[in-house]
Length: 155
Image (tube, rainbow, N blue to C red):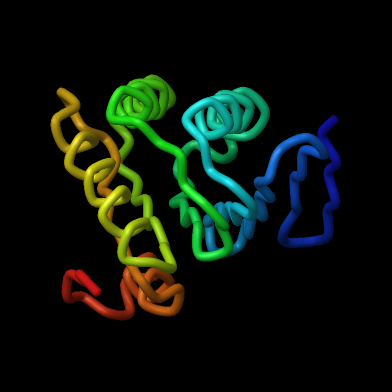
């Protein structure tokens, strides 16, 4: 079940059966997803499909950048094939001709490695429409997202 909370400049989407919370800042044109609990292939792919269907499919959110914060994830059970499928599903949601950014924030060396593999797979997608970077610090991800810090970050 999807719950939506809205105020003047932002809204939040939360699925009761998924460990993801999506906050949308319409003024900053930014979608922030916070993941808690275990991250598995199936849960990530299912959550991404729901996100694309319920949020990214709305034309008013097409040009928004995204931060996905996995620093609160407790465990990762991801396979190489699962990461490839995640990239495929994510790329299907890209809006042709529209460049956006995705910052992935992680809290452990293991998660950093997994996220870098995802980043590498994502760059192999033909006609890439999303610039992806991995961060160990949420503040650096926000700086990169808002353009207030031009250097590329690699924690």
